[in-house]
Length: 211
Ligand code: MD6
Ligand code: FE
Image 1 (spheres, rainbow, N blue to C red):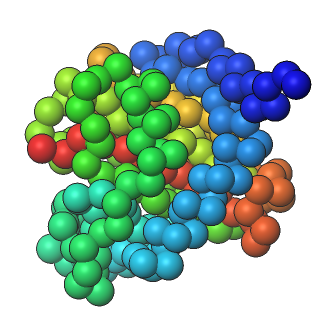
Image 2: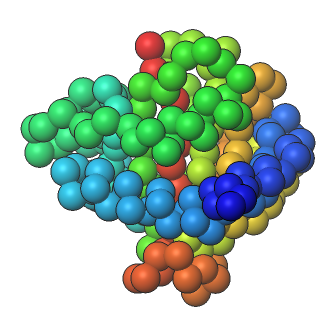
């Protein structure tokens, strides 16, 4: 008998866009489904919540985290926290997610935070920099699941020309090197473009070394 194990997926080559590395369709459909199952287990332990902006308005994105640190926001501002707003520590980052980081990050360190963002119809994320981590030589790796999201990339300083790309389910994006402090955000999602999540919407995971 021949080996019945499935062949490993063929990985895409990176496409460089404003110093970001974009891997369109890095994850196979089966891998995306496995990731969603792992994320359900995380969300069962650390429920999604709607963070308040420091201005006191609820964000349109719902969030939770895995790893030593999670990302929280309230009247005290945005910060990393070792506990969920309900008081418990965050669940561990699933091995399936660590494997993606190890394949694309180019660093020996493992991520200390996996931020899970859920975008329902109408949710967006304004242009921002990720600059609350201690070491900007460590990249941020993002994984997109579910509906398409329109990602906008700007510059290190505010303003100037921007460039947009659609992120599809299974795409991986690496923000390292010269891209690490560029502004970026999600203008909108395209509801109904993916069947991965039964209720629709978009999940984005961002993996970071915090300390
Ligand atoms: C999102 N992503 O894709 C929001 N940050 O929903 C981010 O804010 C992000 O995709 C750092 C690096 C890659 C990202
Ligand atoms: Fe970001």
